[in-house]
Amino acid sequence: MTARDDVAARATAGFQRVYASPPAGRWAAPGRVNLIGEHTDYNDGFVLPFALPLRTVVAAAPAAEDRWQVWSELTGETVSFGTAEVTATGSGTPGPVTGWAAYVAAVVWALREAGHRVPGARLAVASDVPLGAGLSSSAALEAAVLAALVDLGGLDLPAEQQPRLAQRAENGYVGAPTGIMDQSAVIRCHAGHALFLDCRTEQVEHIPFELEPAGLAVLVIDSQAPHRHADGEYAARRASCERAAKQLGVTALRDVPAEQLDDALARLTDDETRRRVRHVVTENQRVLDTVALLRAERVRQIGPLLTASHTSMRDDFAITVPEIDTAVEAALAAGALGARMTGGGFGGCVLALVEAAQADQVAAAVTAAYAERAFTPPTHTTAIPAAGATRLD
Image 1 (tube, rainbow, N blue to C red):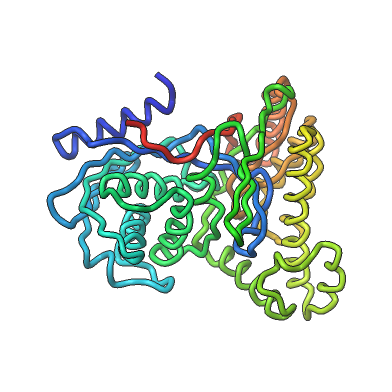
Image 2: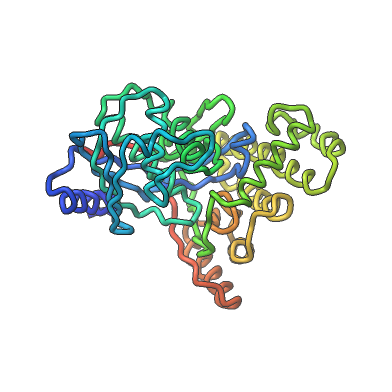
């Protein structure tokens, strides 16, 4: 049995145990890792994520009334809510359903806000996407629930429209000011490809990202420093970028060309804002440069761009932590072609582009560096670009 099959089987078993009947179907959505393009999404910029084989699976069936009941394998809880809990909120005010179940209620709320008639449902959730690691466990949950409710209700919501609705759910009900990248990746990615996303137009291009033929691998290292999106630091970075765009007279920082960066920085009033702007503008350019290299099948040459991205996140955007910086430095010292933090920051994961034959050696070097600093030992896996949300049966 594959890991994916195991998660699906656990979701089914949980559904049958809680509801004493089989589900009508099972829907899965992946975690994601962002190859490059951090904090550019809410600045209308460019990102390049790919989906992971790690999955959240929702087993579901219709309910007889307009209530939604959901069980979580992780907590063992069953949470139930009705129309009142998915009506009285909006404009970023968190809804009355809290904790992990808020992401489920948020999807129901967003569908209803968009004018869809959402049928009641019974759901069971199992997942192997790690929580707090910056791999979009929340977006995976939202996307799997959304896919289930769309199918169960026969709703007219094409896949290309689903990321924006899922983002609306997280912004408007959960209260997390995320951009569009995570939801786009977990819904729209293709296996063997990275998703080149223009966050302003929502246009996508599937960029081939086949590592094995090149003898390469992407090592994903969980720093064990918990990552949280809905905290004050993430919101503060976003607010800083919005203020800077207003000072510069542009709609978003995406509108500042890299070749005009120095002029833009000179027009800003404080050094912290200059650093934030410099990160976003240069990071957008790094995404474009990475895409150009991948189109030209020059995968090895993206390594320095990954490392430059990390330096920018550390020095200009100030979103790394000691565990993250230690993992990057140790990976590079052990021979990684490039390494960077991935995710919103303040913890989470590091990805390293490595020779496939050296993946274990690089991982061991990171573990040794952690031991020297008495950090909680990291975990690691190699990432293979996978497909987005889908119905399993």
